[in-house]
Length: 97
Image 1 (tube, helix red, strand yellow):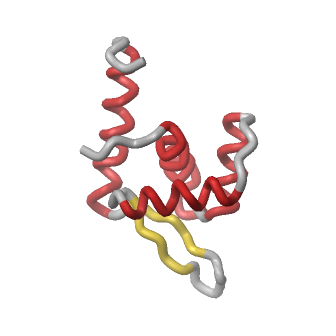
Image 2 (tube, one colour):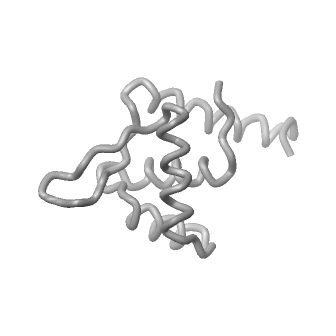
């Protein structure tokens, strides 16, 4: 299991929430709306690249657009959700601070 930073977890949750509309700017806006935390687009792309490198995501050019959409790798989607769920369960039990 590859460990995720809090920021990477936030980006994954945003992608889960956005579904097929997950791309840099939409992820940024989603995170800002849900958390109230100011993020930059550079931060968003930095964490997207790390998640791709770790195998959680793939990116693909959107049809008829210059933007790239972030998508869960078919196998990694279930692993990503399980990782997030396990993390939060352990956190609830105070095993992770």
